[in-house]
Image (cartoon, rainbow, N blue to C red; front, top):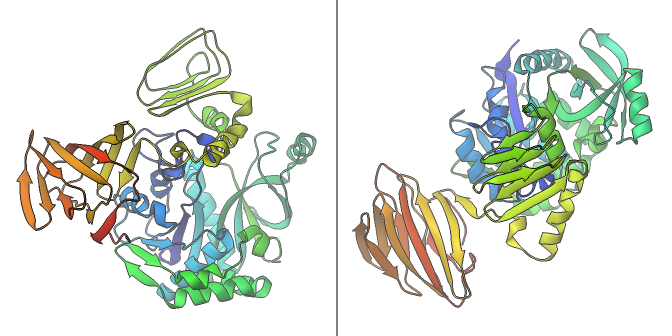
Length: 472
C-alpha cells in the first residue's frame, strides 16, 4: 500500500467539559496527559499514525493553535495547522482539509481521527487502517465501527449490512444513541458497532458526495479556501466566506445519505474518554479498584478515581467517588453521575467565572504564567519564558508592573531603553510605558510579576509588535 497519499487529518476541537476541572475551554483534554504520564492524548494520536504518510493536517481554532504547534513539533516538522475561523462542525472542517490536501496531491486520501481518543492496541488500529485503505481505494467512504463491549447508551451505533470481504461491510444504517433496552438488543445481535467518528476516504470522493448532498457547504468552503492566509505554521481560510457555511456533521451531511458508506470493525481498546467513569475504566487500578494520580492516600476506599495536581488527597471509607483537585478548583462526584459534570461548567459560564475556561496556570506561545495571588488592586504571577522566546511589545492603560528575575536572564525594553537583568534583579514598568520581555539565554527565564492598578484584566493589552502573529 502507498501511504504517501494518506493525509492524517486530526480534529483538535472540543472542550471536554465532562472532564472539568482538568479539562477547560482554553486547555482541553486532548492536550492533557490523562493516560500516559509523558504524552498528551493528541501526542498519543500522533504516535500511532501509519509510517511514511503525507504530512498531517490538524484542524483547530485560534485559541488552541499554539498548543497544537507546540505539542506536535516533536513528531513532525512539516504539519499543516488549519484554523477554522469559527466552529461549523465536522462536514465543513473536513471539506477544508480535503480541498487543501487535493491542492497538494490529486490522489490524496484523508485518514480522519479525533485528537482525544484512546486506543490501547496500536497494532490492531494500524491493521484496521490498512483494511480501510483497501475499501477507500475502491471509492468507498469508510467509517471505523468499534466492536462493542457492553450495552452503551452514550454512543451512536452503525448496523453492518452486506459483507464486502472479511474486513469490511456496507453500512446498513446509522442509529442514534439508544436507551438501555435497545442497546442490549444491539449487543446481543452482534451486527451493531459503536460510531467512532473516525473515517477514511479519498479527498475527491468526499467532495463529490458533499456536492451531491450539501452543495451549500461545499460552495462556502471553496470560497473560504480561495483566499487562505499563511501565518507561521498556520493556514487561515477566509473568515467571511466560511461564516456563511452551514453547521453540519459529516454523518448527517454525507455518511447517512451516501450509498458508498462502508464500515470497518475496530477492536483495539478504544475509548473517547468522554467522562471520568470512562477514564477510570481504561486506567490501571490498584487492589481496591482505585485509580490514584498524584499525592493520594486512600484508606478503606474502593472503586474511586482520585487525581491531584498539588495538595494531598486523603480519604477514609469512601466508595465509587471521583475526586479531582487542581490549584483553583476541586470536584467531588458520584462516579455514576459524572456525565452531569458539564452542568457545573454551564453554571460557571453563566456566572462568568474564569474557572470555566482557564486554569490557574495559563500557556502562551512564549511560555506560561501562574496566577499566584490577587486582590482588588493587585495580582501576582509567576512567569516562565522559554529560551529565545519573546512577549509582544505592548503597553497597558490601567496597570503598572514590577518584574523580579528568579532564574535566567531577561532582556527588557521600556520605551526606547533596553536593559539586561539577571537573577535577583528587578525593574518597574509604569502605566502607559511601551515594553517587552525576552529570554536571550539558553535556560528558561522565571520571574515574579506584581501588577497594580485599577483594572488587571488580560484585555488591557495594546500590542505594537508580536513575533507570533497575535492580533491586538
